[in-house]
Image (cartoon, rainbow, N blue to C red; front, side):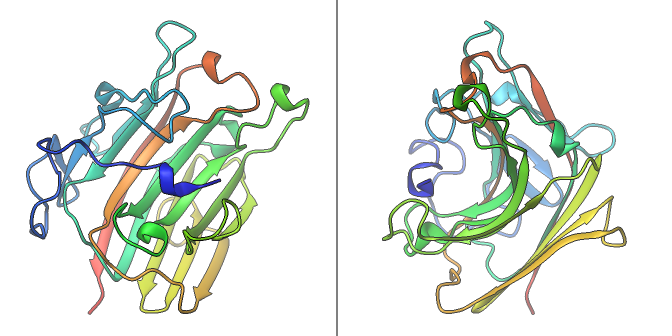
Length: 257
């Protein structure tokens, strides 16, 4: 699928839009968390199949310092997704990590969990999109007469000039029934290392480690950090998805020396 059309910034004049290079925490947004400022998505568009996002679907930080993103469907036929993104533009090389509380194997077939990705829609190649972790069955289900398993992936879109599905470098691996997973990405010039662990922190079972190298590794620009939960069209019954939520326990970014 073509990630070029998936992620957009708020309209000009809204919080976090454009401007000079942000300070370490980023310009003020809707809330502060883990040393950074964040804005809740209220504007419509992709990747949510019906274009509906609700800022109320992002809540926290709670007393534990956790953020919850929720998928709602108040009418039963018009689900609304959730997304929040950093107001800071430009993180660059360094180590990114996040801890997620969600048994990803239980995701509905039509729901996609985007657990941390960087993105600058104005920059080639690949708009500097790097996905640290993402889980979904990608719409598989009754609509296709199949039961697609939920899988997890990490990687990056490295060539936006190629046809959808041909320009990405993504590693997909099985989702286990772990209630908590921790994900880490080390972004260096010409190299990205991805790791996914069971449990909180980096002492649990290493579920997957992938190293990607080469000239197509994105270079830093004015990318922001995003987290989202959304519904994909296609197979299954996207209109009728049930409420779903994911708890994000932690986020950290340590710049490269």
